[in-house]
Image (cartoon, rainbow, N blue to C red; front, side, top):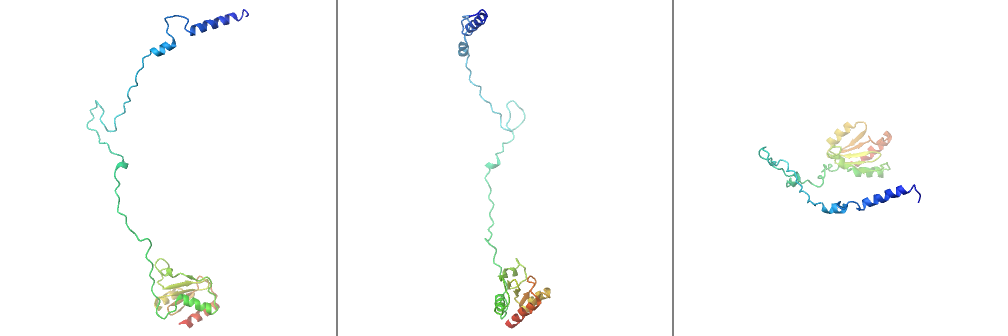
Length: 197
């Protein structure tokens, strides 16, 4: 050991002696201090009074009633209105006796060699939820649309409205508005219809 390290070693020995309790015998050690500290029980937790409840010592008058949450109240069930599962079917007026049906007219056009591509029964459109025309039957094709009415007066009224784009024979009206059928072909459809009645 050198003379330079002696003071450092001496300081180290003194520090160890002090921390190990070799000093004053009247001084308690850290373990003795920890064991001699009295233990106390935790103080009880005091919850605040409910909202609206009187506080002890206050002179604020009667307490407001405590209202239960809305979820605790029993639900009042309203009577359920019963509705039909689907609307009642539309009842269309019948075509007059002796008048050809729309399908019969289209079949006659086909038998005569006339074009009636893509035929569609649109009779439901006769009712109030459709066109509301009050007709009995409608069959549309890409060449001509055939309407059958319950009487000749209704058919005549509609033919007047569609003047220049229609032809009427009895209760049946041919409509060319959506088809753009050439005038020469229209005469052939009209001749077949005239031969049915």
